[in-house]
Length: 149
Image (tube, rainbow, N blue to C red; front, side, top):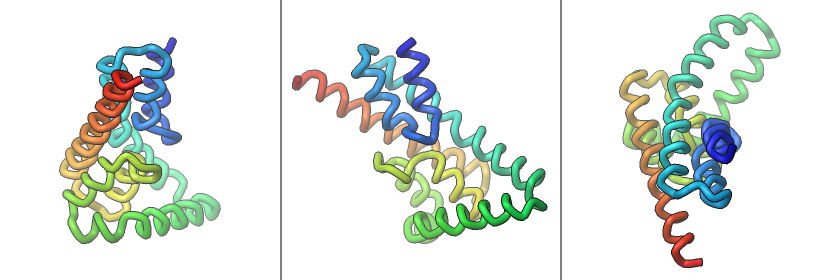
């Protein structure tokens, strides 16, 4: 069951693998398995969320409530990502996603790539490389933290 929870936390926007990997390790899942589960789940975020945004916009754009919410989120995502992503492009997107801090994960990176109309395949690679590096950082910290205590 801890494997499933590690996966679900890692694919959710409430923590992604940054929370899923530590959760798994703290629940007794070996670091390597927690990393693989969290990393794998977090790699699904970009294609699923990107397609979800696209389908939602196509289907719901005529709704005043949806349009207002979407524009608010777009402005917020632009303001949070503008300096690094617009200045450095795909490299900025990758670095933005890889920093293991709140609001800098795959969901916000995907939203930024969509809003900034970045190439799908290139931004998919940038987000997934950022996710990979972030997961490696978290798993390494959990591994050495486990060895220390």
